[in-house]
Amino acid sequence: MLKFPFPVVVAGVSIAALPMAVSAQSSDDEALDPIVVTATVGPETIGEGLSSVAEISEREIDKWQPLEFQDVLASQPGIAISGNGALGKQTTVFIRGHESDATVLLVNGIRIRSATTGSPAWQFLPPQLISRVEIVRGSSSSLYGSDAMGGVVQAFTMPESEGTRGWVETSAGNLDTQNYSAGFSSIDDHSALNVGVNRFRTEGAPVIEGGEDKPYDSNSGTFSASHEFTNGIRTNVTYLGAEGSAEYEGGYNDFVLQVAGVGVDVPVTENWRTSLKFSDARDVLDDYGAFPFEVTTKTRTSRIENWLTAGVHEFVVGAETMTDQVEASTNYVETSRANDALFGQALLTFGPSDLHLSARRDDNEAYGTHETWGVAYGYQFDSHHRIRLSSGTAFKAPTFNDLYYPFGFGNPDLAPEESISFEAGLEGNYQNWFWDAAIYHSEVDNLIVYDSQAGKPLNVEKARLKGMELLVGWQRDGWRTKAVASLGDFVNREDGSQLIRRPEQSIRVDVDKDFGRWYAGTSVRAESHRFDEVFSRIRIPGYAVWNVRAGISFDGGWQISASIDNVLDNEYALAQYDGSRNYISAGRTALLSVRYDFVR
Image (cartoon, rainbow, N blue to C red; front, side, top):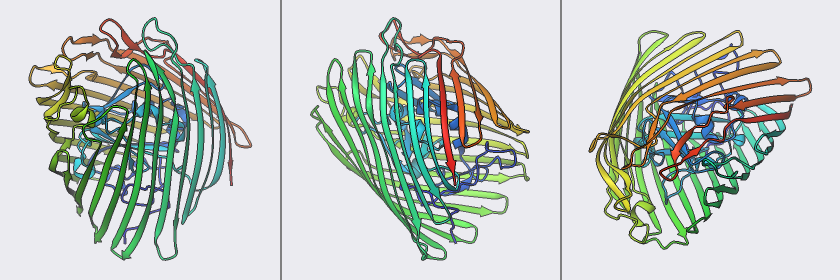
């Protein structure tokens, strides 16, 4: 019978529970193989999966003390960040060279994005309320539909550990940064409850050379609960919301992000389990710049999944309907569209061989019908080494802005982007260390780019995205080290130019050490140059940053931690502003936190 280890709310994926088994970083005695759910919409260890998957644990997030959610993602291979300055400013996340709107963002299983821009508002998701993150790199449209060309990022708000606990934390740093958080959770074999609130504000830093400080503030909260009845039926509910304001060069905006969902998981027979979820996601932006506007995106989703088991084999058959609605001060030609989908998956095991097959059919009233498929094969040579091979198709629908933006800036003739991808990976897992190497290749047809000369988006006939990723980790006697490296080649095949804002080489090294009550750690990250502007080809230099962190625990549940990012105060840029100036980083940032935990 399909069985789930303990109750955690996941309203929009195929299960109503997640394992708390394992954080690879929590102690030397724990496995280096955490359980994840995003790659196959069901529980599996990373070692069992046939995709390039990463899990960022609650312990890692607590030690890093990230000021922005994208700081968490920057620790992974194949991921690059671009932004119009730091702390609440517009942010783009590239996975394996794919655009930010070609990556699906889930919060507790619920998809959130702006239907007008197509991209999630990464900069507004509060990292202080996120307990852990899963990242799938590579084509995932056969499971998640449109926008999953580059991969899927899923953030969870439920803590990992069982028992009852509460916490209060206050933090302060330079740039007049202040953060206040509090929360409570209670988790046992049958029920789970989690509540958290957070207040963050900062005066910020200049976002361009010679500019003024640009403040950012955010108020956020989360609530999740689930319960399993004696008959095996499990119900769950989840919510996360954030609202605030961010000032940028030339104006400011007010924002609201919300996700809410309810679900029920029913054991029909010993080998058949059905789950049903309903969710609502909202992205609200009121912008007060040179051309003020207001826009609200609402996405409502209903999803049913049937999980069936036959010995060691598992099968999933399901359906999903999703409706986007746009309310804006700008008059769009169309303000809503619906997407209906049917999907299936087979997870087959034959001794040392695993075979995963998936297919999905999306029918959208705006751009028609698209079928996608995925196939992956893995072979376990011995207890330590495994190879994986995969291929799949994906597509990305044009956004409301792409198709319908008024005044001639939209292009109703745009075709959806389509891709076919291939990946090969080899991994080794040992008692105290592991490594993973992967190569990938994607061919993209009808890539959507904004043509500043035409004043509207156009399709690029061909683009090629290929690269290599390497991940190595080791832990022993309180030491934990991890190194990741990425090498990419992201090219517009029509003119041979490098796609903008994507660095093609990056490396990061993390070293941490536990000394009983206290810990210390450091990270170094470096990226190569990137280009901005499709036609003028403005070159933005590469950069390197060094971060340090430390903390100590006291009797009675008290903790003090500190972090300094960009210790050497290097000024670097991730995007271009106006042809002569770049958007610049915040420079050195420091944060000191005091936390009180009670555990019962």
